Length: 178
Image (cartoon, rainbow, N blue to C red; front, top):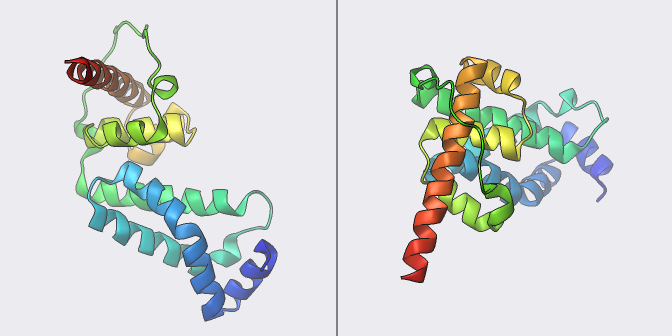
């Protein structure tokens, strides 16, 4: 079944097409959910809610652009809604006048699974901003709007996330050697 056929059949509420869509996209979208949400059961709930929204709002997909990208945006928004309900992002600390130089770029130094494992160790605010900026490609202005925080808070959360990740990497390397 082509993507175009799949979309047309899901629009007609074809149960087999809905099942196919779920089976095709749920593994990758679950990975997106887990990057934002630590608890597996919560991530599974968000995945189901997000894919339900995909199926019920599929008429909103214009047919232009990448269908998987459209699904990913819905999943990220579902994750953010979940996190906003559970965490107060406005309680984060704004940091200014911090040296922005970093010696190691976390993204280049680690394998994907290593990054995911380390992301789980970050506080929710750090992890959310890092995911949105580094992995999803959002700009600080967009992150600030989605989370209801200032642009400077978004920038400082990213900076602090990177610093924390660097420390975790350094600490992990020391324990691996010893």
